[in-house]
Length: 139
Image (cartoon, rainbow, N blue to C red):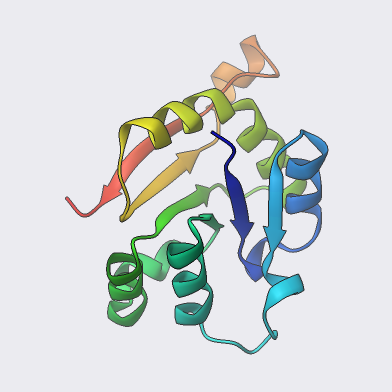
């Protein structure tokens, strides 16, 4: 199954470029929507077009209008967790891709999941260690 990943504007240009460089089919918010567009717009697009949405905005689950857009439009939303530069987050996302793909195979949208980068101790043992994917919403 060929998946298309959609990166939210908050992930900039380097994050999607690294994913595309790893062979993923990526669409960027920047290429499809105006900068001031609402999150509901791109969430609806992702749901109706079957895109896997990726954002760094952890608050989305707590914003009723955005959370409801995820549910109403059947979005598979992945929230990338970590306070490191976006290129590093993207490399960790790519390293975690087998777990992400297995998660996507197992769960039917709509949902919100968190993609965690590897722990510092895991990275010390293996610089290309994979992170984790955890189901977050609905509970």
